[in-house]
Structures are given as structure tokens and as C-alpha cells.
Length: 114
Length: 113
Image (cartoon, rainbow over all chains, first blue to last red; front, side):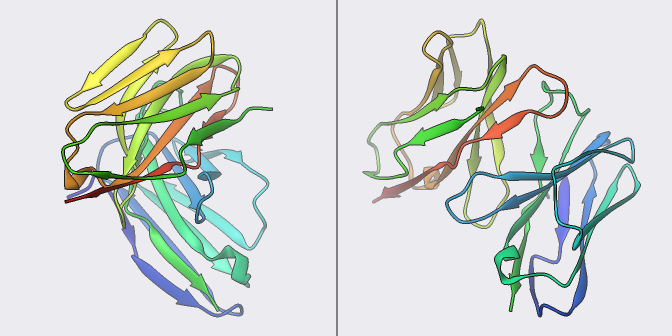
């Protein structure tokens, strides 16, 4: 069982829908991340939380709204998405937000916006 | 501009053969370089981490090299197995404030029987 669990694994939504992605880490880590992975493109960092505080927001459109209620859980709330937002959304955690800690990824949510 | 470029984009090899994947970076100031393996339908998993002073590091059949002068790294896979079929992602971190971790686009490796 992976230390980082993401649900759902697959999601299809219309442009007017509102949905949420969930991530839970069982590793006791202090930092959590959302990444977007599009085909043949590098992973794009979206948000970083350290001890439940958002410490990075990489110019992500407001139709993506993160929430970190505690150090083990991370959500990504989605509303009025565009077809180009279709991608694999990966959650990750690390011991701390420093550069020496490896990222532990979940298996992602495959999002399709119709 | 901080960039990580990987080559080739994709590679097909026969089971049992060796292969080498390349990573060139322009990230500065350099902190560390990691190679991740991403199986289809799964998240990336860290294989190795290399710092400025390290030239080579092995993890089983995987051997990573780093030339900090030329800003190049390679991942060598020995005696490939079908389970090595995956994407291999090079990730370079800069030692500046904030979260300057730059991902390459990955090399897609197919190992055929």
C-alpha cells in the first residue's frame, strides 16, 4: 500500500461541475504538494503546504482551490474547469519542504474535462 | 532560465540489454539531482539522489552519474527487465529560497521480450 493515497483514481467532469480531489498521507510528513502532469510535459508544481500553511502558489488559476485541514490531508477543489485542465493530478508529501527530502507521490487522479 | 532536458524522449530495447538515459540541466545554483521512475498508472518513485560532490551512485541495476562541470547526468540500466518499462524523470533542485525544483519531461523506456 502506497504511503500517499489519492481518490478518485479517475474523474470525468463537465465544465460547469464542481468536484474535489482528495489526498491522504500516512508517512507523518510535514509538507504536501499538488502537481499537474500533462502528456509529454514536465510535472508542474501547483501548490505546497508546510504544516498546513500554504507556502507556494505557482500562479495557478483560481478555478483550482487547495485546502489542507491537517498535515495528513490535502484537497484540490475544482470548479468551472476548461478542457485544457485535463491531466493527471499528483499529490506528494515529504518530510519537510526542504530540498533534501524526497517526494513521495500518490498514484494520481486522471481528470478529464468535457 | 532553469531547465532540465532529457534524451531520448523514448527508447525501445530488448530484455537483457543495457541502456543509458541522459539529463542535461541549466539549474543554478545546483543543490541536488534525483532520478525518479514512474510506472504506467502510478506516481513517480525516487531511485537515486546525487549532490554536487557525488560522481556516481548505484541502486541495484540502476547507476546514476553526475558531472557537475558539464551539468550532465546519466542513468544506466544494466541487464534490463520487462519491469523496467516506465518513464524515467530527472529532477534538479536549486539551492535558493523557495521551491526551485525543476522536472524534466522524462524518457519513456519500453523493454521488449
